[in-house]
Image (cartoon, rainbow, N blue to C red; front, side, top):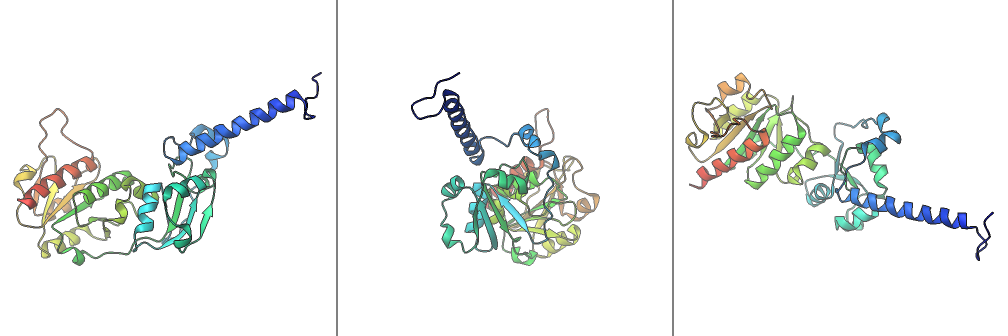
Length: 296
């Protein structure tokens, strides 16, 4: 049998308390790394805690959850974004660098696991989640003075759309225009992929893309559809002072109706063995080429 120690406990009690202390420190260290986005939620561990049973919450049409430090910070700074509630860990609140009292919305201090229950085990939320309303709807008429626009023909992956949005902001495009059907709506996944760009550029979803292209023509835009079999290289297709680049979906490319509606079809010439690019990469290259034309 073990002897009682000086404090009246047993050696086994001391060892148990010490183990518990270090386990707590390890959990806190892991939680901190997750909040910084350095590691994802361990999927196997989450499944043991009920991850298999997780289902996304039912959202109202005007309800959007944004997450990630950079994304939420950009949303908070956007005066056009209506904020509803901020859920944040103490560590993330310090890193968010905002005055919680000045936000004018409820701020709830939570654990990373609380946010996991809403967003799911795979979301890299960095300890912060913002409930908001969608951004105000923009009309094409408001883009008449923008020299460069980007049009997406049923690009379905929100990660790709987010990456395209980020490039569009970098090249100072006036808007990203897409279809209402077969395109992602405003969401936390798209906003996280855009890394703040969603707050900096209009995301306009139209009912009929062909009609929207016709409206852009009336506003003076040259619409150029990117097609791997286009008759001319992109750099030779530019003209005028306003350009709208049109890119098709992953794999299928432009729909026939879109091909028939744009002013011109053009290709990105690639001398290497690979002749096609991810749509977000193609968009960035095309916008760079368009900017060279517009500057000239």
